[in-house]
Every structure is written in C-alpha cells, then in structure tokens.
View 1 (cartoon, rainbow, N blue to C red):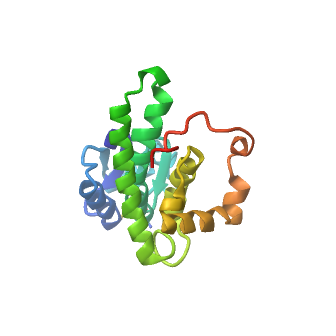
View 2 (tube, rainbow, N blue to C red):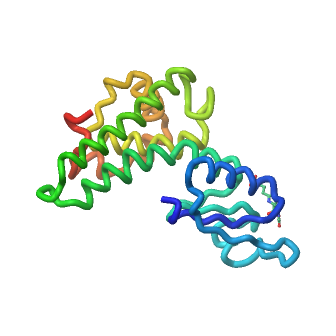
Length: 200
Ligand SMILES: N[C@@H](CCC(=O)N[C@@H](CS)C(=O)NCC(=O)O)C(=O)O
C-alpha cells in the first residue's frame, strides 16, 4: 500500500512533518515522495497545483485519492489504513481477483481472521467513544472510514456481532449526504461476491 502513496513535502514544515510521522508510525515508510524547495517556489509547480490548488505542502495522494491539509492526511492514514488493508485490499480484492475455483479456503480463513481482528479493534474503540471516529461529531475521518464498512456490509458483513459498529453504521448511513450519494447500482443489483457471508 505504501507504494501507492506520494507526498510532496518541504523541509522544516510542521504541516508536512505531522503526516510524515504518521506514515512512519503506521508502517508506510516506503511511501514515494518529493522534497520541494520553497525558495524556488516549487510548491507552485504544475505537479502540485493540479492536486492542490492552494499550491502548498503537504500534498498527498494514495492511488487516486488526493488528500490535502495535514490534519486530514493524518486522519486519513489513521482511519482508513487498516480497515482498507484488512477488509478491502486483502479480502474483498482477493475475491474480486481470484476465480472461485482458484480460491484457497485456508488463505481465505487467514484473511477473514485478520479482518475480524480489525473489526474487533474498531468495535472496542467505538464502544469507548460512542460517537464518530474522531470524536463527538461527524468529521473527515468518517468520510474516509465509513465507505469501507458500507462496502463490507454490502459484501455480506453482518454487523449484528459488532453492536457498536452497527450503531455507527446505522447512524452514518442515515445521514442525508450518505443517502444522496449512495451507489445507485447497490440499490438495484446484488453484490457479485459475498466473502463475509457465513465467515464472520
Ligand atoms: N493548512 C495547511 C497549511 C499548509 C501550509 O501552510 N504549508 C506551507 C508550508 S508549512 C506552504 O506550503 N507554504 C507555501 C505557500 O503557501 O506557498 C495544512 O495544515 O496542511
């Protein structure tokens, strides 16, 4: 995952330093990066401006997801990283990319176990906060975090065993912004894979 990440940064910039610490702490030390020189106004270069119209650093990208603002990058890395890795990249993508007859049940069992551990972690965390990911109010962290849960629920994840997650999921699902932007084909078509069904 680190190989999909790219950070433009400047030396001595506190807003850059914050996500750089998080990147290392989260085990994404292999992220790609470019050190820009302020005196040459490199932050106003085309490569940065097309991602960040303010022409500032940090400017961060994870695959196609562009995240600017240092705090938002930190929250993105915190909220999305493990859920994205354990539930989506490791498990859902394995099902998407591997034909049914080629799937190895032992491999699936390991991935499911890792996903369950991650879900247990968030279940405990949400139990303590009894609110949203970054505090009492809905924030950007929920925008990064919630879609992974929603996608997993669509793919057969039953949240009944995770009551705090279920309360969180219901609360965010009910938000008008989420309802309005709900993937249209999810309303009409069943999922093509259900890796969680009967496994968690
Ligand atoms: N609110 C932004 C502030 C970013 C910021 O102020 N970056 C400075 C470096 S510390 C910058 O790029 N300044 C150059 C400019 O604005 O042209 C964040 O937290 O990411």
